[in-house]
Image 1 (cartoon, one colour):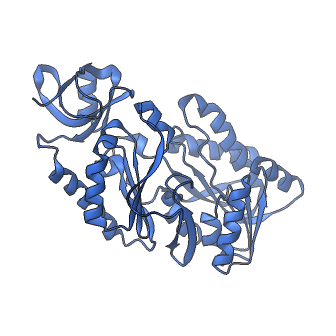
Image 2: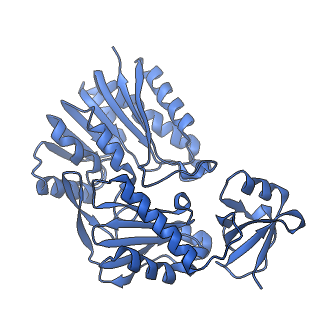
Image 3: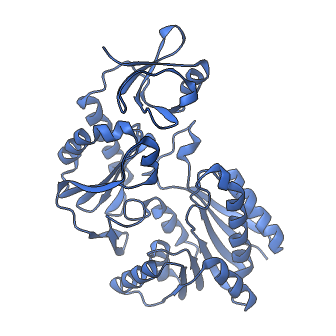
Length: 387
């Protein structure tokens, strides 16, 4: 008999309002195996959805469909085919991009990224972890990769009672591979790099930023050079700052690979360096702020907002009149309105006027689900300093 889970009136309202998660407090009864696909019902046994079930996470149910249909191999193949076809229609000028974005493709907690001939997957819940062998077979059929790597090392798996691991699921996967983004080539460490190997969600923001930069440009939290490499061809000189020596070395290698010679890479604490640059009177025609997530929990929000204000205040002081600030936040706990308010407060304290040229988000291959604010995590403002 198919497992059935009852939800409270509040849980039912959440589902009907378009959210794809139901929390533990709203699950009335739960008797089934971890990671199972279950039938979700409301008051009086009314069918609401089918969902992944977790017996460990606060997110107890992850909605798969509101239709009363079987969740079988045909269902998963259809979902993957739709995700693949959508990326084809985007006309992405890169060999590295996201193929499956979890809830954004109605396959909750599953991430699949393409790096040239290889796929990297993450199963972030009991449901997708249990499903991984079948998903792997379907990815081989549909994507024909040379290899598939499971980067199941995010800490969020611990909340599901799952182990952290990195393992080859299909074929042979090298430690690194070379990918192309527009005219730029760079190496990706699929086993140890950030996320699944690279920050693919910023690709379109890097392309947009290239339209505005010029002259002397400062790239803060540069990591392996996602922004720096794309912007260098449009500026006279680019100064890249990151605290990691490994990241600085990767950026240096990537610049050499692409014949770029106008990037100066410095290993330093960005907060301290921004203060020093301001104090010594240095000025720039464009500044990029792409820090790591400052708020990884709700409790961290106040400190995160303080950090965002500090770096934006310093960056605005360093900008020449008419210059551009490209400023980002990947903390989903800090929403767009809060991030915009922090930037405005920074401008007030800096005594400058700014205009918003563009408000951007994660790339189109990382779709946002309306009614589910958790899926809108990356904010990118392109601002112009007036005066």
